[in-house]
Length: 65
Image (cartoon, rainbow, N blue to C red; front, top):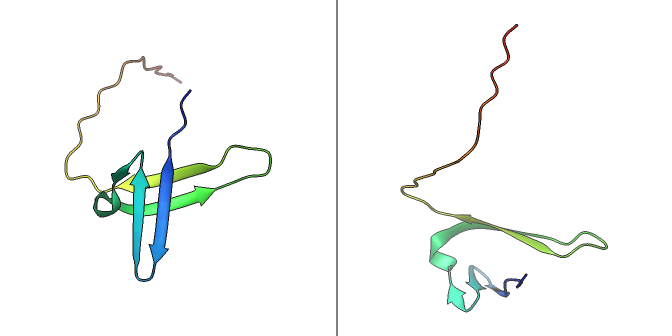
């Protein structure tokens, strides 16, 4: 598994976020960095979205009482 390369440059009041060489700063609204002891660091990036199409494959279980 190839890990994503991220750069965060915080220079008040502007922060730049670069993911795999692409500046996504103007496309996101939030960045949360977590690094728990003994685990790989994670980064949660919230993208601004105007429209989204979501398709899923699965099943539904209906419980009757």
